[in-house]
Image (tube, rainbow, N blue to C red):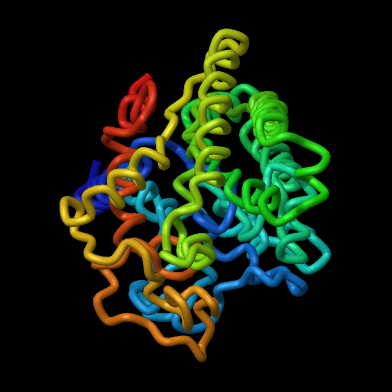
Length: 363
């Protein structure tokens, strides 16, 4: 082999090796994200009628671009931090990859992950009525089925199954269903609190089984947090206390959710879960805030009025300068700093059952 030919062969090897390093740098092939505003990274920007939007200041003030992105946060959310932990880019919003007629226009991210999460979404389709237009969990899975079909066509059935079996399927949903029950006298007449949360768990069970039929094996499931302690609920109390009744519904739901995950583990071959106990984490934040760097756990950072919760984080709202000290960014959502801590715990534990994500990946 001549020196010139050897040189090009050497360059080819280096380039090939660099591609292999890039492919192997991530701990998982992909992250597929389902859920609500806690992990929405911009899907609702593409919903014309939705009242649940965050694509305006002061949202995104601490994001790397310092611009609003559609995240309901001053910066990143837990989906961003989990992606960083496993060495992947944040899964892009599915609706940014399709035309207004829902025709797929960009399939490039499908192999590293897509986010279907939508602000205002719930386990139940009816929950979407809270904010006029959201992508409910069932419809998110419909969208994912198109991604699944594309992967099967591109990779072949066997390779697609291997790819998906090693990927993470993150599901963070349920808070809006709890809020929906709280706001609806019709629902409260129709169901007791226990009946309602049982229906939430059984409906989500069917949805997780449907994802399983589309190749999902490793699930990261977020329990519902202490939503009765959000500024939106505290402001209803004269003394600014948490809504204990709402929190009790959440506790019952999370108990049923964990029991349901246990049943699925016994029933479906090869399935594995990492359950994140958001309720316990937020309880600790509120009980001993200084241990986690927080000094304000009641007021929203961004808003107006009582506890900064009478007006959402709109451009007319005021916002705090010490954002890392606050647990809540707006009347519903945690700050970037809280999300960062969530991401750490989801990946490394504690507050995860029965595995943290690092252990889930190793299976």
